[in-house]
Length: 269
Image (cartoon, rainbow, N blue to C red; front, side):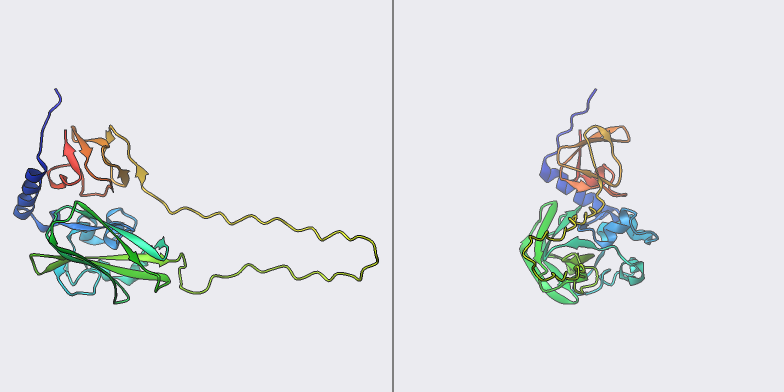
């Protein structure tokens, strides 16, 4: 017999909040899912040997005011490790940063920095945010490979959540000029003899084919939940014998399996 469980949204929020407080900090709080932050890359397995952060990308919490990728949180030193050669997502002169929140804390501001320079601030005036939040940030002052530090400043505590997102602004990996295609040397035309001449044949060129960046597999209703799959609102999955419905679109990662800790993402049916 199909189980019918009705959860008022307010009740769900209180249950999730109280359970998160009662358990370990690993069950909170939020991170940048796209373009993928360093912790998202670790959680997806794109970058290996990340340590604890691969299981709790949402937990990079530290006092406000840091400019480090891990916010100064000693539990996640790998996020500051530049030798990892973090993959960079190609963006234009602006980029939209998407957060997924598992615990919706009252929010003071969201801040974005490039090379330590503030490029955008969004003031939430201590309101409770939605379960997913997006900000479009102007990056036109920069080009090439850069690291964007995205900071979620909590409104009612001295803490913040930190994410570093590596991007190629304008599609250039080095910030240098784009190489030009060499042109054919001009052909010398012989003096006119009065006879019509045939113009030299030109070789048609084919525009280079762009290789699309790899994307997560799209999910489908009724399939078993799996990490690395992109689910949209309304999709249904099964997990450990229970059917769940997606409450907000997201790319699944390990540790975000449907269950009591992910009620912001999955509703049991």
